[in-house]
Length: 171
Image 1 (cartoon, helix red, strand yellow):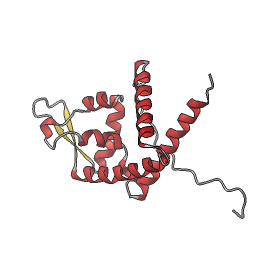
Image 2 (spheres, helix red, strand yellow):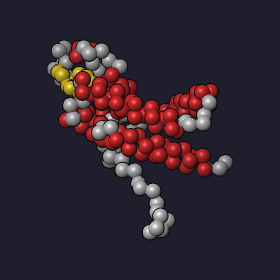
Image 3 (cartoon, helix red, strand yellow):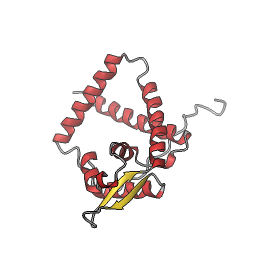
Image 4 (cartoon, one colour):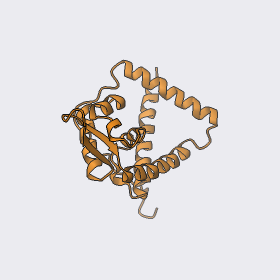
């Protein structure tokens, strides 16, 4: 079997990541850190007693708890999330998204929609739906073989998008 599909898939993921990073930067959201965490936190009501714990977030996002802890530290420093001690168990913190976090997430979602619209240009609605179905199946298959495991180190920030390659000094 040709190995090229895996390489192309990786290139698509990297290009999508870089395009999203650039779109966020244009909106002044370079410090957003982990949009995935903000999306998850936005699903919870603004009730600190019902907010998730770090462990619950790690489980829901298929991430190692230390990775979630590092991401939350960055988001908290930027004012996008708040930690509150659980009223029933002082050893646990409940994490909630702040108003600033909700506003940043709304702007970020517009940036992601812009990138997705460009990525899917020329696709029919049915083709877009099929791509999502294929990706979900791929994700489920990878989770079955340990693809939801993440190492305990915090990944380095993504590199900024590279400028287009110049062919010569006149171009």
